Image (cartoon, one colour):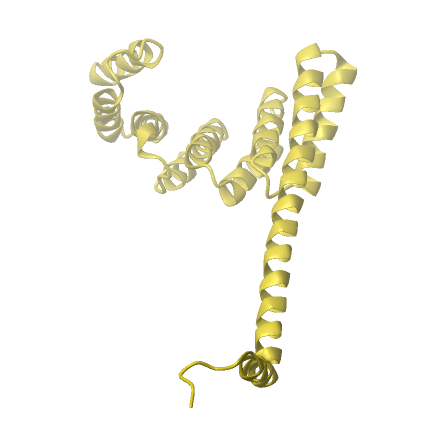
Length: 214
């Protein structure tokens, strides 16, 4: 008996193997093909969504830069479209921040609060959420709700904003006439701010000096 199979024996063995395992292998190949195709389709779909959102965002910024009544109105329309149709893209929170800023400029604090809260609830960017919290806290102080401002700042999304957070806390405590806590917050804020921060430090030092002499 020969040690090697004849060509016919190899063919018969292959036929038997295909008969036994062929359907399973084909099913596995089909599943893998569907999975890969589905993943590629999903990636392409997501990429198209980002491209569309980016285009709308660019149009929004361009309209806003023209600063006419019509262009500003167009920018608002585009911002709301981003929120409605592309809420999961990174452009929607930026549009919401713009709407919040415009609302504050018109002293529409209810709308500003709504937009900033949306950013906090939906943005995946820690820094953007922290900026939204700080602005929300400042609105609460302006609306004479300092306790709400302090509660808002209890959650910290980005520790790089520690100095600004403590400063706004100090403002809230000062509105509550708690000069002891205000002073402590301002002192901590000064410690947290970088030494080369030329914009915030002088104003913050002035706040601390005013509290210390009161």
